[in-house]
Image (tube, rainbow, N blue to C red):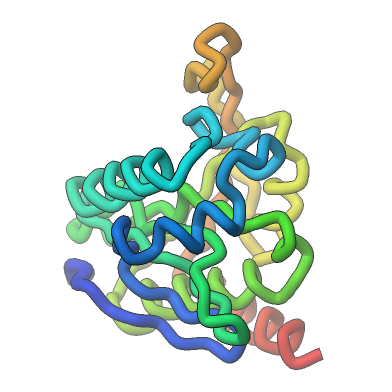
Length: 201
């Protein structure tokens, strides 16, 4: 069996809607949500975008790079306010190996420790596992980014290990060790049940 290739789609939840990232349409709201915020961008491989033009250009690169590797970048839209508050992407997709990464995720600081990340990941994992036939989802993050590691672990992902000196950080000087996590298709039903229960509470 080979997993399906991704096409542009919209994933609807109660708190968020994930829609294909459109740099021109989403840039103003994205910049208002987190542009230039050092804490939001601290662990991402770029300097914080300091203007709408900068975040528009970056969103264009992310969307193009995701599609180049078989994936898809989504704007995360807060359903209550109707505005984009961050983005996330399917990345490094192999339909033959039935695997992908979920990455390049950020949200405006006002949405940290809310239902946003839980529901966004629930939608992404459900679409990949249930609709598209993938067998493995991977996440990776900076070894120093303990907040991200805790968030990934709360999804039910398994910590696999550390790649040392994996990537040059955006400061151009220091090197990042990356922590890898994964979830397999047969682990997904239990994780889905726990995540739905968390959202319901």
